[in-house]
Length: 68
Picture 1 (cartoon, rainbow, N blue to C red):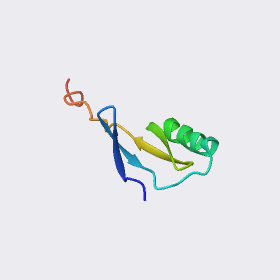
Picture 2 (cartoon, rainbow, N blue to C red; picture 1 turned 45 degrees about the horizontal axis):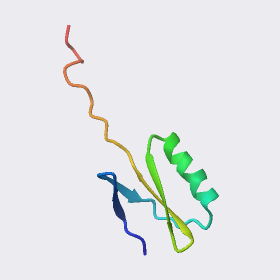
Picture 3 (cartoon, rainbow, N blue to C red; picture 1 turned 180 degrees about the vertical axis):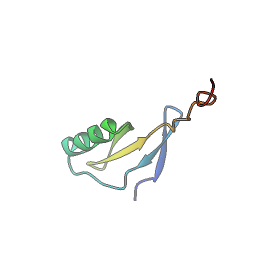
């Protein structure tokens, strides 16, 4: 079973839980994640493909509401 989480470039990515048979299928799925605001990494293992993804948590700006 693949690792549930991996570190790429000092950032933690989570496995999406699927094993893809082709690189094309993995790339198509990764593109959908990217359109939803995720960063993705595709990893090949034993001829199969895994997608790891992450998304930065956006912190709401403080002090902008009610400052009049």
